[in-house]
Length: 158
Image (cartoon, rainbow, N blue to C red):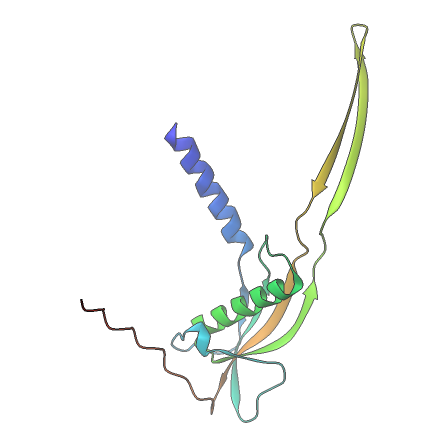
């Protein structure tokens, strides 16, 4: 009895993980990874010199509702992927709304078997949100200061 529920959970995890990918096309060499908090988002090219590392594309999560939440989600994914590649910046190229969203379907059917007539109906509702897509270029800005990560707090002493 325990095995089917574990397999179901594993299947759901794999499906959700597949929905949360960020694709990349490498343009240059990757650098040592950084923390996502160290990656700045640029809406125009930064002043000074920078190197392009990769073109990134992502989409908001499958259960992300609200335009601001969708935008926050795609920016966080771009920053996380850029950090994995050692980029200290993401030059946002653009965003777009996907297709889908809420819709309602109605169906009615009927039939006759053995002299008995049956009529049925149903309503289907899809409330999945419309995804937000974003494209950016992971960059390494030459003169950008890299803030150190916060140090771990010392253990409390009683």
